Image 1 (spheres, rainbow, N blue to C red):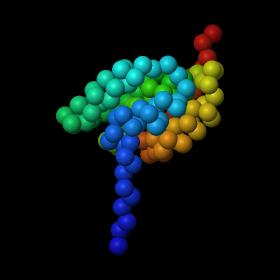
Image 2 (tube, helix red, strand yellow; image 1 turned 120 degrees about the horizontal axis):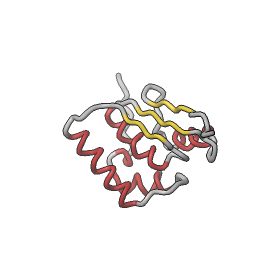
Image 3 (cartoon, rainbow, N blue to C red; image 1 turned 30 degrees about the horizontal axis):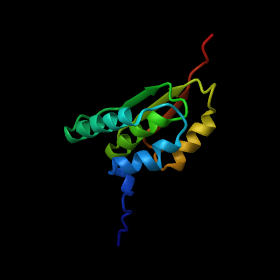
Length: 116
């Protein structure tokens, strides 16, 4: 007998996801921008537009969490790149993992050298 884990409600509820996860991640992101990004990602998912996702300058992961949610739904690869000079990579990783958005199969985090 196979047991199937029920998908979390926030996986398909944008408002709940914004309130429960995105709002708790430090950073600067307007709710309007977050909502329009989720609209665009949902449209891409519905149109079967597949591909990897990349964010350069993830800071603490606020915008990255929105991209990660789409990657989780589609099984896409996601890459985050940052110098992590203002927020530690450990802090970033723990906030993404705490929200159940990371999957070792689809997530990569890269530390770029700090600017000269």
